[in-house]
Image (cartoon, rainbow, N blue to C red; front, side, top):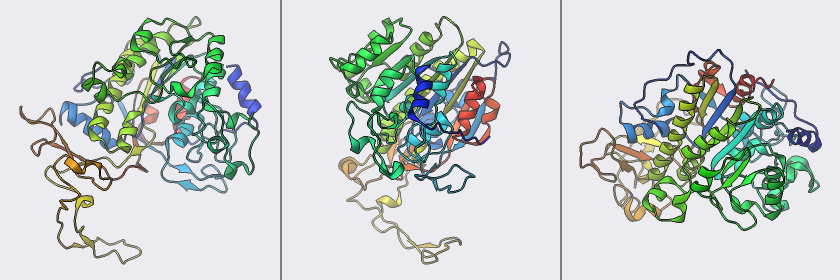
Length: 497
């Protein structure tokens, strides 16, 4: 199912395309397609847990539902895995001359893979590894008459949502203003492009003017300015959050809107983690909607189109990744649950609708999240990590023989939940959490808690990520696929190819 798009040759060509353009964990598995579904897909809901690896799913399940429970995403009938590698700058596509893989992707190159069907370099959006423009699923769906929506708990100009609505040589070119440092990449283009080239136009400017998404919900208000607000209003958007006054929207504003086109940003930066909102219910940030609420409202708004052609909606749970980068296990777990609640909303709609494909996956794994044995600790905490006696073998293809003691370093691990050592970037001591299987009285942060978690690093890994799906076409997502295959599966489902 590997597929390469012939990239468009100029910014004008892509510009023309643009211009025309909460559930229980122990739920029963969903059947692949309800009886009402005759095989025709009218809607696709694509949900992306940024940074969510298979162990994130396992930890979330055990934390909230216990060993015998299930997250809602795990009840979807089709299960598989997605390979996520990127490529180096100027690389050819897989199978082409000059192909040069980069085994660990970032969110931008991953977003381009499923949005545009091409492998590209880390930091690139909507362009291939040679900097050539490639149309996105959302642009194609919009041009074909579908309603479109883009929802994220990150800044809406961040890599994952931007990958559907913009084309940029560098993901840092978010706005509100252009800078050569943020937007140009002469390593790809050879020399600086004119500032009116789409590929170096700030992402916020593109989003505010191209109309690619009918419903835009998330964070990142500070990326937009007065001119962007005028451009949005001129296109008929109900602007819930004012870039001109930098006034953010609230969940009440979202609940009230009935606009056909809606632009609602609820924070000047990324949205607030759910755990913080729960711990501080009187804070202004607590007025932000949940990802599940934004998903539900988006479905309601997109389903009211006059033509009834159906819709394409992308939903990102971005803070799984951001809290994994920070090695914050408690907030990571909370964001996994918040994302799964959004999956529940999408699945509930799909079951009732009968003509909706739901895809749940991730762009990459983040930080090497691990579930470790209760009562154990990791080599990162050890005063004297065991020596690898086979380390001098350059092939290192035999079973390593590890010798020597393994003593915990008290200065690097000052307690079961890191204590005063939590601020030490070298400290990877376990964090512990009670689960649904623990006896009453067991609390987080104690040695009695049954879920022990650690991180390998603060960065992405190259691990395959899970994919769960429901609806006609979901059978194509069983086994292992590449992230570029997701483009073909979605465009085929919507009849865009």
